[in-house]
Length: 273
Image (cartoon, rainbow, N blue to C red; front, top):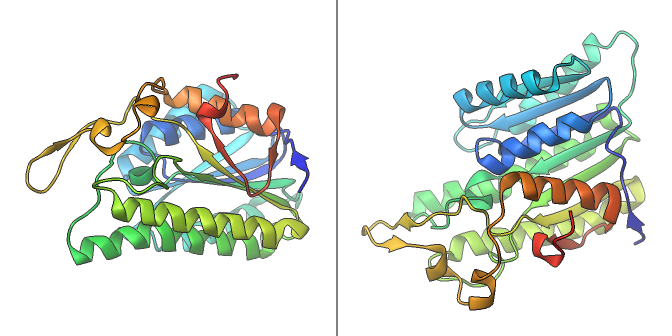
């Protein structure tokens, strides 16, 4: 597959799943800042209060009506994301009197618990099932609906899987997280190969060890820190990354550096912004 660059200043339907953590908030703001007039951004998360605050923040920062921002509250299992996306597209179609088609659609999967600050896995059987539903089944279902939507037919598409190069290795206290990460990465790789001929591009982006990664307590009250999970001293010596740095690096990869669909890109591959 050839290397690809993307000018984000297009009439775009943007979907962001996972926005209540600092990285998700930064992704939402900076991507919306670059979209062209007539774009629609759908921001999904479990936390209604955080969604409301983020929506208000984006609107105050953009100070324009060029990009319509709407939010959707995900249920506990994230199983209603499909319905929220379909409704947003339907409402936009009904409201668009000029019937202008989107030039591109972008879906960003930034599932919070696997992407930024919580490093420990759940313990009970029910917790495991719920975790897999949220981190694997729900993103796949959302993706498949996005790919097949009649409102996005013949529209160039970009899917970004926010992942972690650390978490696709076997780590202590992170068996479930690593398993879901590996399964998601393989799904996105397969999607890149299967959908490339239909104008779909896929990027798995590792934002680095965020400065919001903090120690956590397990069920026995033991304090676990990132240093307990990561065996490599070399990795631990790498600089912690701020959410805005990771976001701007991703945008720079898309617009300037270029990427190959289906490949993984890590923040630490290069420090050039």
